[in-house]
Length: 340
Length: 89
Ligand SMILES: [Zn+2]
Image (cartoon, rainbow over all chains, first blue to last red; front, top):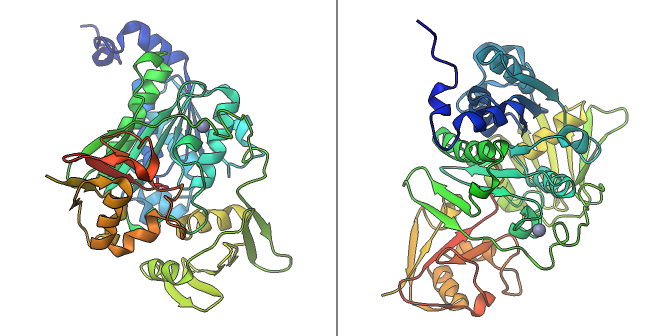
């Protein structure tokens, strides 16, 4: 008896068909960030037969990731393997007929174009706004569609961004909330189910785009609450004064915005400095950080001890990460606990 | 009838866990003032020191952007949704 073809249950769908499946096999999709959202999205895309996957992440696997980052196991956490490498290995074993390339990289304005140019679509699975504004700049500049996804607590949002056709991310949020202004999953917590829900919606839109079915892409922002089961579609408009999609000024890509990380000479410490100074509410930040580590709030700074690192965080958003000998590690720690 | 404001999960720590807040109809500014009257901690997350809407706090009436900002009329039975920036992954 002949074996049923691998994608049979998908090709009989009118939404996909043989033609859609063939398009998927030719498509290149990047998953930027291989944490919780990225794990789920990459799994769906690999199993669905996307021919070329680029998995991008700067972090290594840790035990506290396993609650929601479904691609990793205890052995990965014990060995501290890079997420992108572990994810690529797993997904290559799931589907040997596709190409899965890992990129263990801290995405910044110098490397993002190399990482994303040539992709048909990018799934956003990063954990901070700075990276999203950077992704938005690169995507609008090169005309690459991408799918925003964000989760916190029991809720989340997702929205496809089609450069040149409707609003961009900067139309949605014209100004960067800035360092320390938004909660992170590491300080506010995250229910694993909302990760799967949001990521599944992101992957659905990414599959449509990879199949060339742009006309069928959802255009609204979807906001979902996993706990109550409620959801709402919100219509986002393009802003006439958007510097990115209207003005085509790419400040994040030019390195004029965002933050810099500098290794402090002779010390086991890295300084993170936002290029536009922030106005942090230090007592509020201290209150949030009490959930994750030992916190001291001084008039001029908040000191946090967590994961063996000591962070000194100042009101202008500057922070010194003691115990981080490496700039990538320091940036990841900053994004995780202060947020940017 | 009144106006119902949906509070997204990310902002419920400012509303004592409340998912919905009901206030009287009026302009968007009046509706929000009604919400802040019940949940004062939310004000700083939504408004600037000068009383304008913060650029990173989006508000929608019946799923669409208010056409006249805080002066937009919110009628009886309308649903208002607040959307904060959500960064997590
Ligand atoms: Zn725009």
